[in-house]
Image 1 (cartoon, helix red, strand yellow):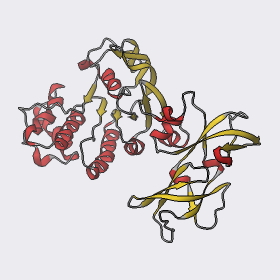
Image 2: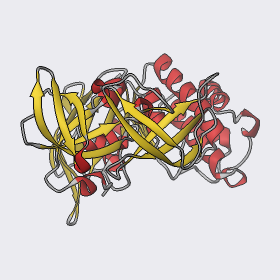
Image 3: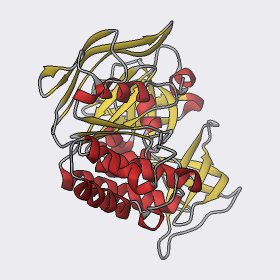
Image 4: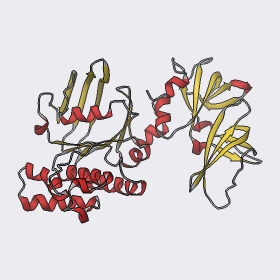
Length: 368
């Protein structure tokens, strides 16, 4: 299966920059998930790999060989678009069998391959239906099955589960990954769903305004995101503005507005430098009377959100900032009510500290 490399690849549509000097590598057999807001360049990235678009600058390599001048049909890649693009006059089974037939497989082998792919997406029972007889979600599953049955080495998936209901989407994401791995595909999977990306991707790429913000293992991008935007895009966080006051060994004292002080790691911090603290919801603890942590404040519960197996609390601390805490349902775990006064805290090592962005925190968090 192909390895893929982008070397300073750029693509514009008129004055709009879709991708700008993008460089990265996808290893043989790797499953890469690409995250990013609308307009970040995700679909353009896939179409450049597929040969449906040509770069304005830079080079794209498959297995170390430039494919800039190789037509789409010669790239051993299949692009599964958001718009399904099914043949309206062919049955579901015939649509899925089209790829293997086009690659020279015998009709019996093509139909067998198509049947297996339809089994995977739970549509064998509609094998003889026409596309216009299916719901949008079913059509998307047919398009996914057609990509899986194509026999191409590089699978390019553009929101392949986007039109599915939540329960089916959750089930199919893992089956899709399993099939890709068992079949030896290299896969690049575009999604808006960060949970989907975290659970199926070997690597996660975060795009914004045509540039790569972060690229790495899911665990690393979650625990040590490259910047504030990535911290917000993957997992979400509460953000506090502060100033480095003093450093002692590996600990920094950071002053927040309103006279509050917190402890955080001093790595790469400069005295008197403005910084942003990012705090994951699950790292914030709440108690009515006692917390054994380096950073503890009084707070007031301002909102309670029931999320099934967890509750999310919004807590206002004395300086007026609001931080979020997610508490998972466990036997004996306290529940808190709106307006209740609590203690809220976090460990020194749980605070992610970033340099203050030049254009300000609000602009840095904006998706555009």
